[in-house]
Image (cartoon, rainbow, N blue to C red):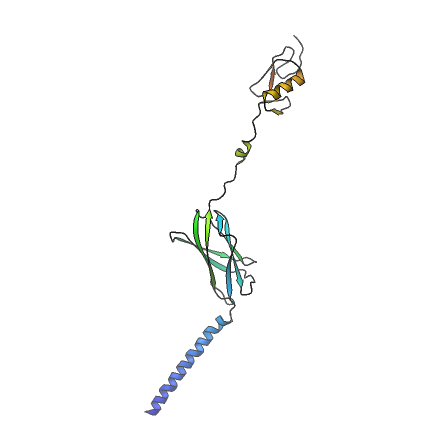
Length: 200
C-alpha cells in the first residue's frame, strides 16, 4: 500500500515538474521581448480630410518601422470603422480622417512580433468642417470692371478718366463709347477708331 502511495506521489511530482517546464518555455520568448509603445502625433482637433499620425517606438523611444498598426475610429453612436496602417522608416503611420464634424475615439493597437511586445493607445479627437478655398471668381470680383478702353486696350474706370484721355489725345472732339468699350468718334475728319481721315 505504501509503495502504491509512493508511486502516486512520484507521478504527481513528475506531472507538476513537466507543467512547470512547459510554462517556463512558454513564457521565455515573451520575457525576452522588448516593450513597445504607441504615441499620437499632432493636435486633438483636425479639419475634415486631415490626417492623424501614430508613432510606434521601443522602450527607449527608437522608431519601429515596417509594422502593421490597427486603427479603430468610433463615433458618438458607438459605430466603428476599422483600418490598418504600416509604419514608415520613422516609425510613423498615417491615416486620413474623412469624417463628418464631431468627436471620435481613436484606438490604435500593435500586436507585437517576435522582438516586441504588443501595445495600444487611445485618444479622443474633434473633427471640424474643412476650410473652403476661395475661388478665383470671388477674388476677381473685388476688381472693378472697366468703364471703357483706350485705343491700345488699356482699361479706364470712370467717365472722368475717359474725358481726360480724349482731351489729351484729340482735344475738344465729339465721341461716344461704343458697344465694345472703345471710343467711336463723332467728330468730322476722324473715323470711328479715331484715325484722322481728313474732311470729305
